[in-house]
Amino acid sequence: GNEESFVAKAALLMKDDAVIEFPRTSRTQFVLRHYAAPVLYEVTGFLDKHKDAMLPDLATLMRSSSASFVSALFADPVVPSPATSKRRQHSAQNRVQTVGVQFKTNLSELMGTIQATNVQYIRCIKPNAAKSPTSFDHAMVIAQLRCAGVIEAIRIARSAYPVRQTHVDFLGTYGMCFPDILGRTQSSRDLCLQILAQVPSWTAPVHFQVGRSKIYFHARVVEDLEHRKRQYLYAKVVLMQRILRGCTKRRQYRRKLDAIVKIQV
Image: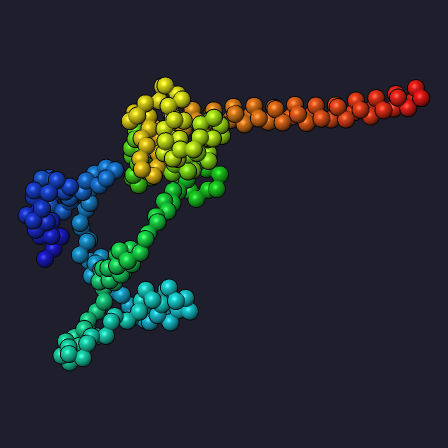
């Protein structure tokens, strides 16, 4: 078939699907409603691009690469089982491998690897289109963050409980600000509840939630706790300075007093 028949078949099969739309003004276009925004696709040339055959010499060159990753990408397909007929084996060997087939094979292998492992994704953001190390295109960066779903994820996180800690970690981080409560012989969960109760403006579940093993905070609570922690540490630093200065002055006073006594004698 051609590109128009491809779009017509897709429209017939997915006419009730909300994520795809087929404009009435064109027979070679369709719109996919992606997460960030709808995208218009033009299918002219789709079939030709997917039928482009990979040059055998190029595939052989890539397989002979000393880099294991590159050679694995262009490795020969899996050999059929002995039960496969000779005719089918011969046709499989002589079949021209197109760019589309190679892409589908690599994509299938990638999905198998993703499903078998615990994947952590790293978002790479381009600061500008000119590849300049000193230029920052604000609109371009925002568009990339929006398309990657980062802005939406931040909005959802800030509207809920973006910070979470175990009971023990919470007591180790902020318990110093409440020494009277920290010295009590109770469970870590009860101690956390008593510390959070010291600020009447904090209410559950608006600002925090205390679970069986973790505490979930709103951003406002964390900012308040960090402010209290800074004040507590500042007061302790000032106290240590006072003690150190007092010790130094007393030693100087004793040396001067001993010197005066010796002079008088």
